[in-house]
Length: 490
Image (cartoon, rainbow, N blue to C red; front, side):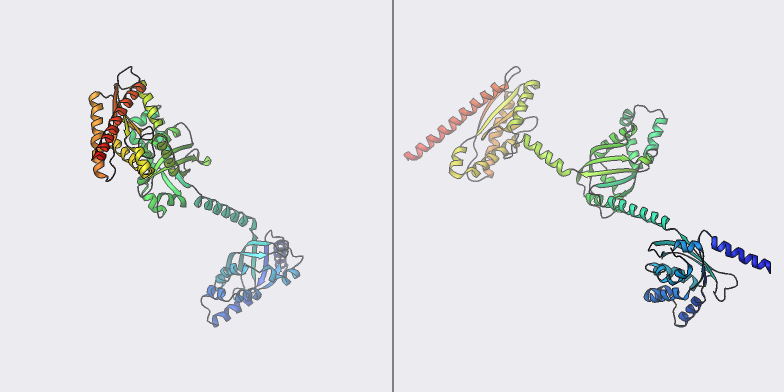
């Protein structure tokens, strides 16, 4: 008898001083409730409870609290058990009901113990994440009149986990919706290949790559793409990541071999952060000019297992730069080289040759009269026709330029007198073809030629060609005046 009393006292002592929240409860009311629900035809309990949330509250009301320990009162900010029992509606409230369904299902299925992650509320209003474990005590399996329940407060742990999840979601959102194309790649096998080359005694890596270009291809094949963001799919015209990765060989081709060679050289020298301009191709085959930023993440500096690449599409900028460069060297109206380029080319030929240099001075006859009679639009159209003739007549390394309003010139490096005369004849022949193609006002070119020998001044030679061209213009206008006089005398 005294031994039984001692055991009971020990149990009471351990229950009271346990470092976790303990509840001794009577679930006989729950057992009776389940029996009633079964009689009422409930089979899918979870569905029933969600359709009738009041049944969850009914379950909670069927549990009778017999005893709680000091840790329970501390956890729930209750001064004593009586206050706690009177406030159970506040403790088991809010989103706790959805969590309770898993617990109820375990008992419903015949289990003699249950565990569940749930939510309670302290009397001071704090929301508590708790892990609940319950067990029907031996000898009470038929009545459920004694159930021992423990609550483990894991609010801090779950809060930290939720913060981490939010942080991960935030980072993922930043990645997915970044305004630049982002790639996460694994370069660990590339590092292994480079380390193997060092182990084999390779010192001059640049020469090695020049002799073994297949090594560059091998390294490119070893790159594993881990992830790309949404803008990457838009940039390369892919419906999804699978389509893009399946066609990666179409994206990284052509000029990319040379760019990746430079990237490998930088990695060989330990440059784990790099920036360069490269050319990729979208899935439609169109070139994309890209500003690429490459960085091995700090925590993977030893294995290169995670690399972040950001790609900014600079195609529009490159086109603008190319157009500005074009404008700096070309005449917009005719498409020929402009005066600035012509002067630069004359200076280059004067310094380096090749000699002799042929010079042709060309002028459009009758342009002023055309502008006066039909307007400048008609004059501009005639100048464009002159440009078409010169473009068809000239091939590199010759240079055809519009150097003034209706003044044009051709430079023929390494030409002799026969080549210069052949160019003049070609111009006049193309002029006739042009006139057959365009009805109305005929295009008429005055052409003067000169040849500069080594040591001659190109400017002086240009002046001689101008003089010859003006002599032709004088003949053209004189012939026009004679024809006009004959017409009036008739």
